[in-house]
Length: 123
Image 1: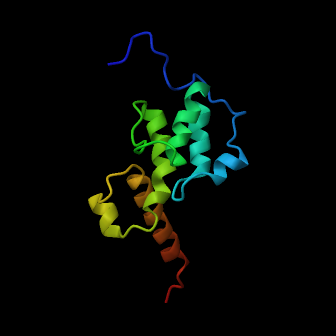
Image 2: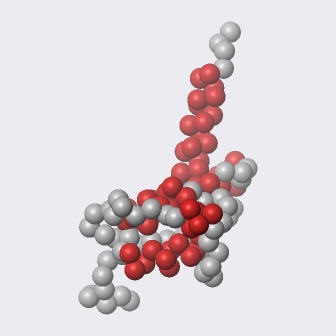
């Protein structure tokens, strides 16, 4: 249970001046969206950024899969979407890996297929 005096994780307004350094980007594990992670970190308190970043650089045990703020969770789903890029359709449909980003990946895959279908020559 959290204290009623605890500071919220999310800032009132994004810190648009925050950017991941080249070194931080280079240290990210593959299969995460660095731009989405940067957007997420812009939205959180500066004192929490390093802790969140560490999850995506393999410096923390476990995985950051849930944030209890719907807006932040939406961005976290985008961070994780590339994780699903090479997963078969069945894995997406059945949620084999139980990680965030699945719905974003499914939507992106469906959109890519629709674009490819539209670009096919019609007989």
